[in-house]
Image 1 (tube, rainbow over the protein chains, first blue to last red):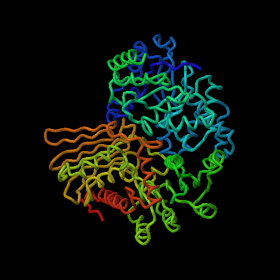
Image 2 (cartoon, rainbow over the protein chains, first blue to last red; image 1 turned 90 degrees about the vertical axis):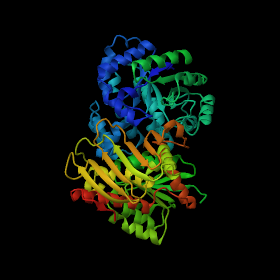
Image 3 (cartoon, rainbow over the protein chains, first blue to last red; image 1 turned 60 degrees about the horizontal axis):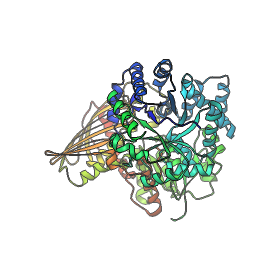
Image 4 (cartoon, rainbow over the protein chains, first blue to last red; image 1 turned 30 degrees about the horizontal axis):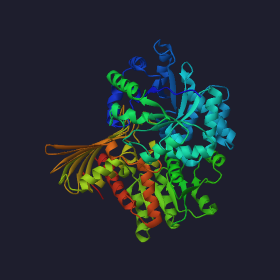
Length: 292
Length: 340
């Protein structure tokens, strides 16, 4: 069981994502700069203490990863936490061509002689093993870009995790854990907006001590169904948590937010935002002080 | 109704999957049936969920489904919304229709007529009315804080359509139009909910990729209560990764500006600001936003005990009339066109 890095750099600000403000996200995406500027900020975050970073399979990641792999600053043990898939890509493709065709497009771009056979199988997929084969190809296609770097845990996007939970698709959740571990040697992990339900279901499904990425902050922002129930669930269940939205999207100061997170033994890691160099320096300093 | 409610999903695309997930997660509800023409999906489902009955059309579902269905979610392309809803109405099965209600007001009339004669619980999916921010806007407006609203400006943008594309969303015969009917119907619904009925519109549409459907629109609005408004929309707006809404309501005693993330109320020299974390309330299960869960909960309450839903067919058909007028005005060199 590989420990999670204590302080993990978030990727949202690099990709023009802002969960508090769509407007700010638009402004940000206009000022992102190229991969070179982003790399500089990642290197700076490493110097400030970031042990690794989240990285969705955003189109920009494909450009960034080879540069990161070559960076001297990021050579020594800097780890990646991929979040897959980059959901927006599927949403846009599904708007154009429907869900199934969006999936087929990704498969068509995947490696290996099996791809054509897989596309054929999509029409008649009738057994669990067929479904698993398709998912294997999708995951391989998504994670291909991370080959040159060190990966710790691979998070399944919260929309997918939460759909698996809602629909009771236990076999797919178990397959995901198996495949990420056995094929890649990475830790399987899940992002979720519903940790209370997840911990209860995973107990029933026999998925022990899961690695989770959840919204957690003392304001209770984006915490479902409510803060007391989530606090109780993460105190009383075996799990390892990477907390995100820790500052309630800028609502709390790091000094207010981090001691609260440090009070949970299961919270092993926090995702730290990085909208500017000054922000990186300030937040990582507070993380080292209050979430040591 | 105290028993477990059984639901059918008709049209298993993105939103069908979302509705299936939400009803599966809500207490006292079960996802029991699905209708779709896409065989791959149906095979996939059969392999995963043998308790969900899978049908290739609505008639087959009626013929073969043995247990009572307490409600259906219609998430097919808009051209089939009304025909399917009529079939549900005939069998007194409560129905939820994804927005927009139909391709035109005229197309929705048979359904309006039937519902006048016999009420069946139903709802149209304008989920924005369940967002924390927009609810707060409604609360501020309803309390009379702004006085008489005189000026309205609103925009809704996303960077979604980058070429002529394929699929039903970008085909006029299935979708009924482009960004105005598919995306901007949300904003029209929101403005009518907040400000009131619309009397007439003058509009200009822009086509970026083909002559069939519009990609941007600029609409001047005259509200029934005398307020004037300007609405701008595009689904090909660079850098707008997600759907982004901005509204400004100016009244005789205050001004309210809000977007998806915050509200600012200005009254004289006093400014009050509410941000998302100020207004947030958790839900029992969140798949893709609290508004979707709350919307389904309202529909379920309406089925169980006749509770109120935010948008019914009557209200959605008013939005549809405004959309018709926007298209008509654009086709007549932006002539002011009354809502019928």
